[in-house]
Image (tube, rainbow, N blue to C red; front, side):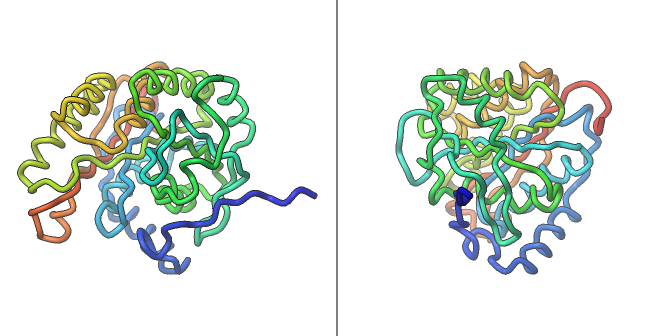
Length: 281
């Protein structure tokens, strides 16, 4: 019998608690305390941050709270690469990720469908080994849907043509209601709080207006910042093809709101992209 290829946790005890009991309590508390806005339709995609839970946990929880009553089988998580530089787009080539809450399996069948789109989308461990931008989302998914699978995708290159390519591919493989798309991104980094709010307002406007290419253009010209602008653009591109008509900002803040230090902050935002229809159909 072939041994499973499992990606172990890389940032438990750093970005979130390593003790499963404490982690469960923390995630459940964040979800319970998250605002519950009335969404205008069914959420088909989320944007959520990937910092330590002490800083961005409430922002991420707002996204996952919006998904609690929306049945799904697979969460497709698209993240940037912080630690490994490579060209193209890496889909995890193993069987599962592990967190302190247990295994979360990769949707192998969906991965094969995505890999049918040749070129810059490849099956690899590249970008996944020590990357936190996928991992920090998993405990939230495990708490709201313990049986869910994942399709972890890391963009080593976020150029616009790759964002379009990935967005088109994700739309083609995510046509039924069993899949939800998740873009992993923080916003501006290490500016004073007032500057961060200005920069982040630009990114949030493009997100709320469903304008993926304008977001990439403004990031390229330093009019705003997002370390996961490529994943956000790819997920927005796919969501638009899947019928998204609204993007609702669920929570926005920066790290200074937690620490009280506004000298060098990091910005966070979460959003739900919805199509028309009953919110929880």
